[in-house]
Length: 189
Image (cartoon, rainbow, N blue to C red; front, side, top):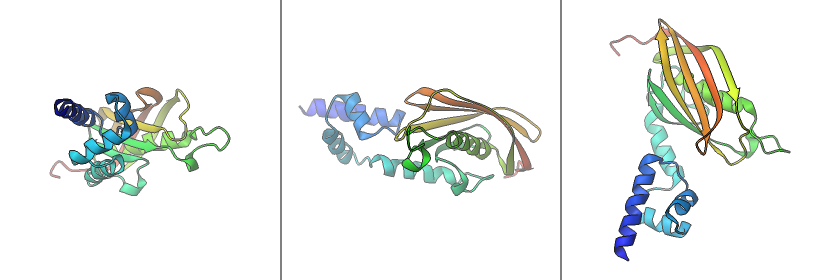
């Protein structure tokens, strides 16, 4: 019995290492146990609940921001390497959706992607010059949107960035952004 529990706990740690934003419900389904068992396993392993894991990861990354303040980013930045890539999570809530359909208003997806693209640029001041976006499928109340931004090219003060947003590994939004740095960081920083 203890061997099964230890194996399950190891699997739990591996799953959270791959995706620290899995909910207890998702973990329970993946490991084919109850949510209560997942909670007990997390407590035994000193793994905090999802909300605390998100706050911890986000707080480490907000200090890296240059072109934006933390409050100007839409979603929680969970990973950021300036000039390379960035990842954020947006939890869809009641005030973000159309009341009748419970579908997310499109400007929230755009704002998440746009703020992530600007945050990625290693500059004190950066602005979006151009955006080419595509919405694929509706996002609903309660969904978690994971946006991943990657720098594709950089020429002078212009950065070309692609942002892909997914819900449960399914593409919901894709944007190609041209971001212009008005004040580039010097190489000495």
